[in-house]
Length: 164
Ligand SMILES: [Zn+2]
Ligand SMILES: [Zn+2]
Image (tube, rainbow, N blue to C red; front, side, top):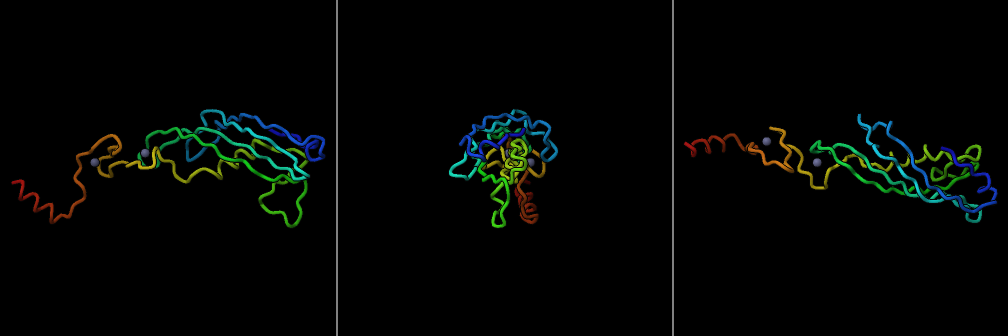
């Protein structure tokens, strides 16, 4: 999805609203397709005394699996999209600026890049997810498993004696 920016760079208008929804349902992440609902981008692109910036918020929900307990989890994200836009790169410009070629901003591509940069390396169903028992696979958030904790084999022998 391209947004034409000629008039904004030329100063004919000083603000363009951004209000888009993207379908990223075919984007894969770690073997799943987590974007089951549309991704929204809301904000504006503005020209303030010759400096063009996009300032928007990307909102989306991911349906993924918890990295600790493997339960499915829905996570909501709101991440900022803030970039300076330039129609030509000067030598002292850095990565903070996005070069707009042909006066068109590829908003879909930029949204995708911003999302993947902002995603955490791990998804957790909750901060203190207890994960699964490494012995029986029970989900320790909801089940209490009867596996004995790893105990010293010598202590185990002693406990065996006590049980007799
Ligand atoms: Zn979990
Ligand atoms: Zn267990």
